Length: 244
Image (cartoon, rainbow, N blue to C red; front, side, top):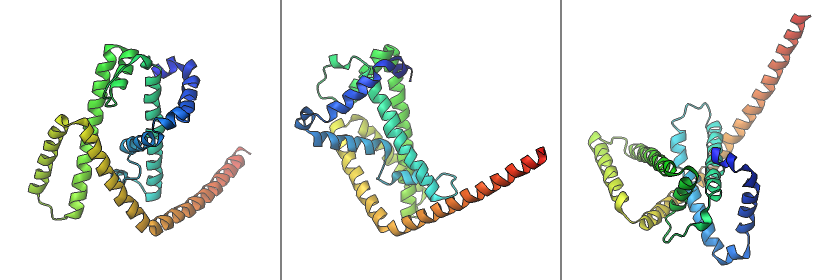
């Protein structure tokens, strides 16, 4: 926020550049469809929209209605995509990124350059800490998803098999740290696509229950609004009577 506010005068021109460059002939000739697909892949990877894993996290919340929790999840998706991702883009675009020449870009190099440009050597270390925190939280969450689903599919899962799952997870993490990033991204994209296919099928199969639950929620919400309105009027009337 400090960096963005510092460059506030040039933000309108940056946003204009983003919109204008996205729909030019050069963008189409450079592979608009491929770029769009990469954007969709990374968007899903960042906010988990449509692949069903968010429902696992939502199920642990202390919510009094599934629709209310679903609306919270929707807000989370917009916050991740519009706020965090846009902040990252603005952080990069306010740097001197035009002078950066890279081969075989993995995605983090230009962000690292922007952090070093704005914050110096501290920025590089700060980015390392951020990545470690993101990675750690992702690993813990991913493992929780896996163990929860395995226990659901196999209710009588023994502690020994849970321990083997933990060992397998650690071994995968070690392998993932030395494997080719291109191979890992391709593998992740395939697995996420499989999750999306399964989740979309589940949504279609459960669409009747989903719409029924949503409509009941809206009806109850409207009733509660009318009830709150009546209570508010009664309280207001009592306050006026006490004053008189």
